[in-house]
Picture (tube, rainbow, N blue to C red):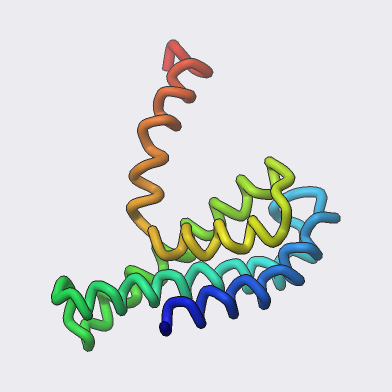
Amino acid sequence: MVEWTIAIVLVLVASGAIAQASVSKGPFDFALWSTYAWVIGISALGGLVSFYRKVKSGAARAWNISELIGELATSGLAGIITYWFCQWGEVNPWLAAAFIGIAGHMGSRLIFMAEGPLERWLGRMFPNA
């Protein structure tokens, strides 16, 4: 029940901030910093849900602050990368908000999943490297 409530709040809160970013010219525009705050917040909430799931399953201790901080940082990175891909692909803001929340929940798993295809793509782009 907690996960569904968080997911609904994430989508509703993020949609406005992500919609603002559609007029952006690049990832380093000053106007994007407030959007980045929302994106990191949404993905961090996804990371918090992931950490909560790990605690409930016994895979993590509830008061392991270093693991919680690592989970939130990784989730934030996964969320920002997902946001950039959504911007590049001109994804609907509602769908982008959902992807960002899911990416935050997946955290490092998403980053590891992207490594193989990225290495193959870079190998084709730069064969002599």
